[in-house]
Image 1 (cartoon, rainbow, N blue to C red):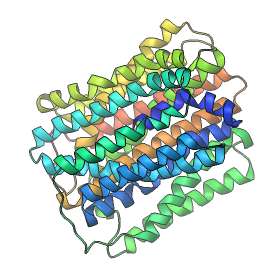
Image 2: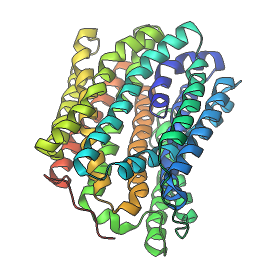
Image 3: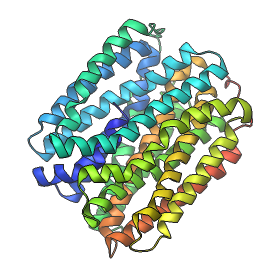
Image 4: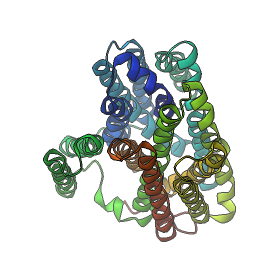
Length: 437
């Protein structure tokens, strides 16, 4: 549900915009409001899981997400939809850290854990694959509101299966939540997303944009200072001294920035510039996200032979080649020229997901598994939000829609290349040992 609601919205937003009379900025907030809260509260979700037990927090997140999905489907205007999407983000922030921490708990063997993370990534890839196509089908047949209503039965089944089949996890009531640091992180993510969303409309030199960027840096510095001074920080800074953990998190940020920025801008391109319906747009995007369905499982199986580093590097180089190919395809390329680049980006992103996930999770001690999961997914969601926001701003600011799209693809290719370089430096050739407590 969490990943589906990242991609399913991309083909639905034009129909939502028409019915609710939303501007391009409003469409960006409908897309990014979810990932903003998701990213901003992931560390809180991880800390609450470490404190109260991951299964309990996971189930609470499923309830919140399901209720919020009903609110999205019933929203009468843009403001109500954005508010419900924010609540969905809260539910997602409680779900995701627990999901990885529960896998970490269930599979103590590194080899089994890599395969489990591969299945986890494959499920995410399947959801990403189903998102544009399912969204297009629902928008074309029963309307965009069913993009959200479809979560209701899934959420109920998920809750029942979790309570029946997932073992309860340990509680650590002595670990408090660092709320000042959490507030600083939320402000940082919110300001970053707001600056990127509004820059296309106001211009990068606008005083409000510059002020927002400055305040974002101040909030980030306040978060680091608070974590340095706190007796029980939400993110112990010593964990970031692990090259594997910090590098894996940075790689996740970069490939999410590139991939989800591509999906968002390509969706708008196919509908606004090529006049495709929501369903045909979903079909057009299908080759890109279809590659994610098996790439994670494949990399999970290969990791035992090759280690994670070569798989992550290969995936990032494939992604870079794909987006660079789109950027170089010319102002009006045929669809067949875009299929290969989209497939390369989809495969490369998913191929690198398992290795970067396992690297970041294995670098943390077990009782910080929720925090490690939250850190990794926080950076990924910040990357997604930044990719969507920057892509939308480039489309709005460029002299032409197509030129803005090509610039966005070129920036995404650069992000993939940077991730490949980081993987060579940060991911060990073998599974890292646990960090010292």
